[in-house]
Length: 364
Image 1 (cartoon, one colour):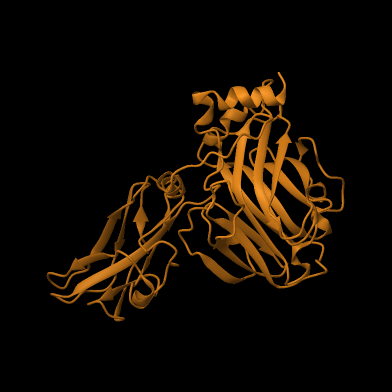
Image 2: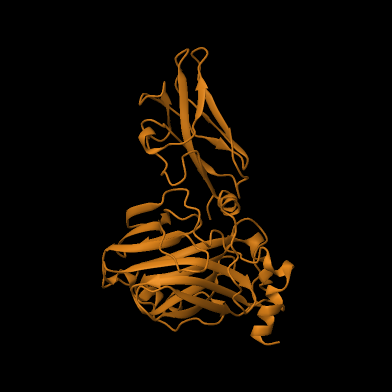
């Protein structure tokens, strides 16, 4: 069957169309933590949910949820990375990648480590200032195996659609669990530790030197931006039309890894003037120590780390008293995948109200 016939058959199949995209938040709709974070010089989840920006000594960056998108394809948001301090000469160990990590339970359809291992296709829209060669890795965390492919940005600051098909791997099955099994990694720049060998275009044991050979340095000028949207990762050798999901569906999938009490886009630790959203409030009856508790909106991937904040001072490990910046100490929160509690470690005042905001995280 030709690729065109295969695609036509797939589009005509109702069962083939649903849940084929293994990526979460590929349309960049959900940005729970914040819509923009500046002065980034280290690794972390900053803005767009499920997309981790790894930065190790390679420039300074702003990461944001942007409205610049390819027209005519139903997208409203993109992930944008903007260089604000350049590094034109990376040291050998410097590197910068964007990555999403998928759970083992969600990649079993790849049949990795079996004789029936499937081809998979990664497709996305990208807009980059730097033209030339860019690299994408699939990295198997469970077996330390990797495969890489290059794509070319042909026109500066222009949305281009890319489709990369990767071979199946008959060696090393993914663990069928809730831990991180597969990373999809976009290179943005690196030193020779990750680029001095030969690009690893077939599955093999991971060698850092072979992972990002030829990658252009997005950090070499403060004029440089790099943006992405419409990310789809699916079984098969054909990039099918992007599987648009509702915002509610994307949000629920993201909340398996991260939740907070703050309003959307408001960074935890924000004060009342910044839109803290709902908080957990108790009125004291007596002078003992209160214990705040809450139920999560979605079950977490694993037991999350919970941080309590005073909604009015923004201080972590504190609650606020009487809707003011007067704080009381909060001890370490205890949690399951469904709910949590956070105890005060000071006596309260009879008749006063006490509030906490919170964030909870079980990221990969």
